[in-house]
Image 1 (tube, rainbow, N blue to C red):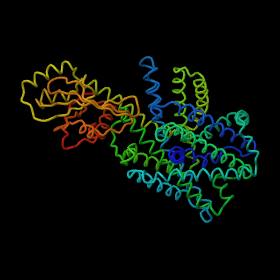
Image 2: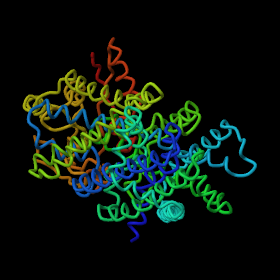
Image 3: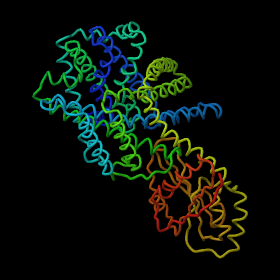
Image 4: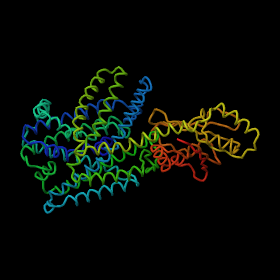
Length: 597
């Protein structure tokens, strides 16, 4: 039960706060007639069922590696079935696009959630005429406080998130049921016929409504991406609670709109009309709920960027561990402050939450489409044809929503694309730059290296102690090692080549000495899961390695190409490989190699 309550705070914050703005936004552009309300409610109910319950709760959570989920896990599961370099390149690109869309979505989520909750202040007597500028400033202050707190870690307050969200969902359900009591006809929305009838009956306008309906499912992807924190069972059980709360609340809001067709801020006006005495505490709770939703998104952002770093698609950004007990709790300063700047800019740019909703949903829908595509492929190769068929139907549905969302682009939706293009460009420049750099460095073949090494080791006076040289593998020797030993004649009595190999599993840690390559030349390999937090210094100490010096390579890139100049700047601004793993600075010795690209 504790894990179920905990899941309410970790997993369901985003989708749990979507009732604040979803129906409000839809009925800014749609006439609130009883027929339209039933049709829109039907679309919402069945969007939640198809996009969250079926796609994520049933299909996606059944695909994991050691309990972990997410786009990178889908890529790792799919890779063994791929034939040829083109298929592998396509899936790698899709996973990178999904990561970029997730990051783009991570900017808009805190902005729309916090701003829409703060706008509820206008229903408090005396605050009806408060300016939007003041509301934006208040929302920005809350966002600044939230992001500034990240460096300290959320371990101390995380235990509060679940209970607070449980209270939030109970209030959503109770208020919805109370409103349904006045107009039980909204239960007709459970029939998908009315949703289909609405879309067909309203033609192109009905089709365009889908790009706002998808707002009800934003955050659904967290059921899968956050699965590793709690396990599948608590998340599925938690979703059963959340689904019923959302169902009752959306139906209740529909009943309220039928009775009050001029409502502008549906959820807050419904609560105010039901119990004005407790409206201010509810408003405070709604702001807390949006902060919790934003916190979950920020933590998820740190995790996915860390996965990107360890799988070598992102540069080595500085990572701090904020908990001595929960090793998965991390803080990445660059990501944190970059997100904050973008969130405040987006608030300023769009001014009001309903304007933000115009840009929201495109990135989410893109991620869902990629997830459904990869799942279909996996189920097909596994011979699970029923699930493959259902996933294929989801692709068609997701593409319908995605095509509808494309019409958001001219009206502000282009910001979703711009926000996603920033990390996508970074990833593509970094990965292609690393490949080009590796070719330009021309590592030396092991056999050729050993011939020269044996001659020098026998002929030169050796420095006492142990020297570490970090390398991708012992098969290809990096130029900086060759320069150090052969050109600078620096040979220690004990030379250890250390390599860190990331496995296809999310977790797991193994380390050992391999065979000696030559007298005084050993190989030490660390095998770690792609989500494993590796303490290299502790591993070296535990293995009895007491190094005197740690050598590592630095590249000075000489280029006239604009793209490679950007790549060079990225390399200069981000920590080196050994700085990322926090090895003792007093032992580090960088060897610079000039490279033309």
